[in-house]
Image 1: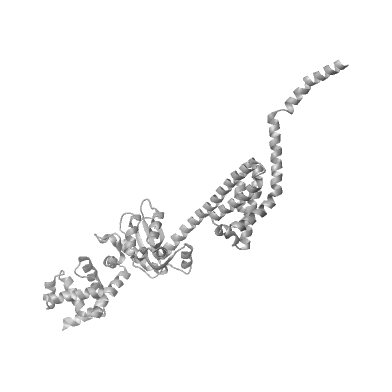
Image 2 (image 1 turned 60 degrees about the vertical axis):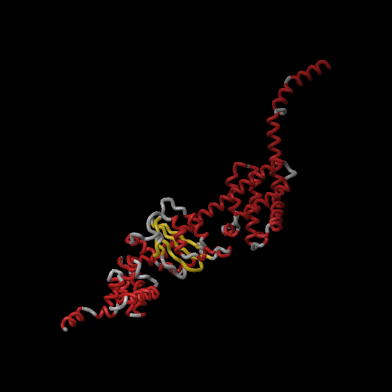
Length: 438
């Protein structure tokens, strides 16, 4: 019996039994998979159990370590807490299914109201992520190395997701700002300023609080808008940029930002500022409009600059940049009413009101080819008298008749002023017939 029993036992243990156990129980792969599954299930259960405590500890740590969080209104603090809690919950879901990383990471920030994006910066968001990770790391440090590594990997994904959210928002805001800036520049150029213009200007972050001038030129083939803005900031001016096909328009306004650093760039005249910005334009003429008191009045400078840009090619040796007021004769010949009135107001009327002798001397000097002797003979005065009167002309109006370019400006002003005077208008056809009858 014992031999049979032993034989039977040995046959069982050496036959069917070992084969069955070896195939189902002692397989290392099967054992490892079962252990990993049990460990994952235990980890998920543990994470779900402590998620509430983690959220509470995270909020407390945020209040202790981040002053900007403690100073936020209660509603926004609650929204930030929702984001932190969503991150902790999403981590548990990610441990369960790592393939869901993109969707879960984006869902974290979907829990926050949209205005939170405007009140919490990217830097603050990354601080929030760091504090949350620190709290979780402290809690899971003794649990398992796998969970700790998973948490660090997931925190990286969340940080990238946060950067993506802010990058998309910045891109959308940049496109909106570009459209708004183009609308503001177009309103200035067309002179169609309305009650909404100041608010639109403020929305663009305009810091100018002084004089404004408009600079018009051609758009370069490769326009570097960022370089233009950097140069403008260094010069102490704010700038609005409008690209209208081949025409590039800059609205320049004095800003107070560089003055805080002791920089004298804010004291530069607009002509010097235009010279510094000149490399940002394409080839061709560059015209600077006259300064005006404020941005809402920039339409006056824009109209002068556009009118000068249209006729700048008529001045063969025009400098670059050139002031719109230096193109008054060309603008007047092209029919610009503002240029005509400016010449009369700046040249003819001051001279006429000061002394009729100055007007007659200037007329004679220009008609005689700027010859002192010929002018003196015509007026029956000494050449020194002519010199003295021309000097007085320069003192009264600021232009020197002895220069060829300024002589053209003055002669155009005299012609326009004479056409518009009452004495000229009284000499109509009837007056000429009466004079002939005498």
